[in-house]
Length: 214
Image 1: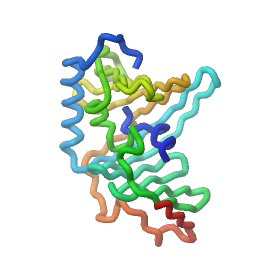
Image 2: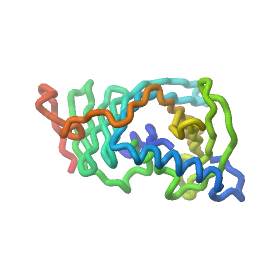
Image 3: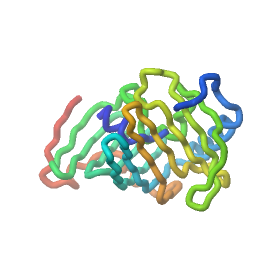
């Protein structure tokens, strides 16, 4: 589970000059972005994730969907469905028709899908790296550097819309040379959600094998 979340994200979110700490301009942009998402009761996003590895000469892209509400999320990607209601995590593997149940431990993973808009607030330095065009839109580029030097992610580069402060894309650079590129393809604020949306309903998965790891 820990490796899975590290692979995904995402929220998310650095080969930076040694003297850089917390750039006021970057902080202003990040605060505006965070405020935008935290003001929503929930949101749904379709995204693509591309793994690039020059050493292995690999470039692979997968698509997924995620719905976030506060500290809860429901993520579908690569034949798996991850449901987290803030207390319990269900990981359903479609091919095996199996669901693993575990306790949610916020400290177990450094990055989880519902933290992308608050990632910078704890354990990261950040600096403003300028503007550029992304899909025809002007974006602000922010680089995040983990303060923990043992972190296998050494840089997270975020691309934030100059127009409306929304996250358009982010790149995650790992020490092993791999780079993960996440791009938001479709975004829906405050979608209607059923009361039990963030729970796994066994009745909807005929013959599913349940493995309780709690």
